[in-house]
Image 1 (cartoon, rainbow, N blue to C red):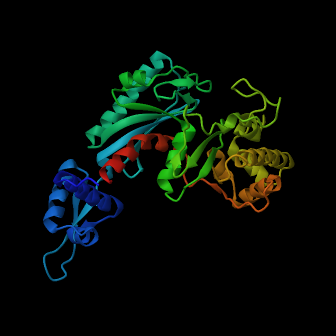
Image 2: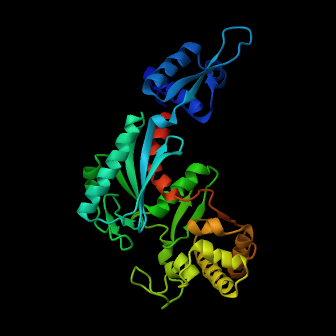
Length: 376
């Protein structure tokens, strides 16, 4: 086993101090000494370095217990941030996320995302101004990550299938030139799953289903997102659910997407999700029948998935804000009725993340490695 060098020990000590202050608030030198077993001179030296980097600042002075009053130190998450870019069909949303995963600023633009060079130049300018505003407030921008409704190339450099947003062929290089920032492309379902893992450290193995106008999925294995060798793991929306059935935007028929989408759920009545679920709760026969049919297709989807990967199911997306505990119980009963293995134990639960989690999750592409790097 290689012998630790003086430099490596100093780095380990710095990471230990940083990690403790990151995880706890209002930490004193005495707290650090008792918890980490480091000397006060070592702790003082590391605190000075962290203050110089901007990651830590002096907090309040505590009441005296008989000697010199202790000073607290607090982590400064807003000194670094990353930008998540959400690409909906009629709106682009920018969110700045700090080192704790909290949104510290956001902007919305009523435009349709695409790969047209003029559009990229325009949205690039908007992102640049947004980043400049953050920098002017002392928050250094680590990068901008785009939550894309499409497939990304294996090396992450290009959208190779973007039929939903008409952004096939969009390259990271073009985004970086337009924004002046380090950029990344991330499938929106993978970005949403990143948020799941960030805010719920207990997740080990799970399948994530995100139900909206265009459903999507992601696989979490051993506490990490499983992308697969070609970044296509979790494209559950294109499994064949009804052979020869409804047309999917991918060109095939009978995919899960048209049967588990919000379009199928609300039908052609010209209503939105809120209005649809008001009708369901009021006992409207037509709405209840359509909701039950949608749950049947969703249950079949889950059963198909779990015949391959027998783990828990996490359901997120716009639909979940309207689903009750009773709805989840009904869905679970439908799944159990289809399950070949009657003794199987698993959970179907609602995502703990809220609206826009794919945008936050995209920004975490830069936040997570930075935090891991300073808190090893």
